[in-house]
Image (cartoon, rainbow, N blue to C red):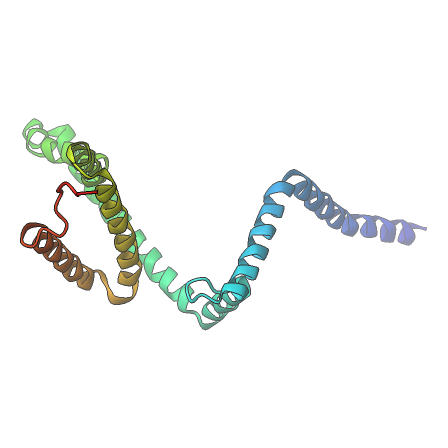
Amino acid sequence: MKQQAVAKAAGKSSATPTVDRVRALRRFTRENAPEVLALLGGAALWEVLGWSLGLQWLPPFSKVMEALAQFVGSGVILANLGSSLQGLIVGFSLALILGLFLGSLMGRYRPVEKALDIYVHAFFVCPSIVFAPVFFANLVFTHSFRDTTSADMAFASNLIGAMVGGTLEYIALITGFRVLLIVVAGLYAVAFVLAHRWRLLADVERDD
């Protein structure tokens, strides 16, 4: 009798984790059903569009997962992830040590604080001015758009420029950003010549 009781208790104890896992899975599915359905629907739509359109930049979802599995199996992703984490750890460690050292000096000696305080405030401001070029570019566009005599031409030129810029950004992932700088410089030179020498892109009145 004691052996049977022990066996029943062992069976119940081994079955308890399985029951808890099933309950947790049901609870997760019930609480996150919209998100799961949205992900499955997006994957299905991606698969259908990938096979039907046949675009190089939109492969089917199954092909993407197959390529991901190959990359993970070959160790390329894990190796790059390891090197990235190593660089992150080294950089964070150096920044932590240097920050504690300089912070201690600034807290202990008044002249050191006065000498380095300007750099500390400069680093505080840096994240805030990252998007300053975009902000000023918007100001320039709105000012130019307000004073233009052909609004449709100005808006179309800005739209085409945004499309070309986005295309070049993706091309730069293959060719590199150094080549992109040369291409952008060439485009600016061509736009300047067309607008100021031949007046092809100039803001002039058109006869309807």
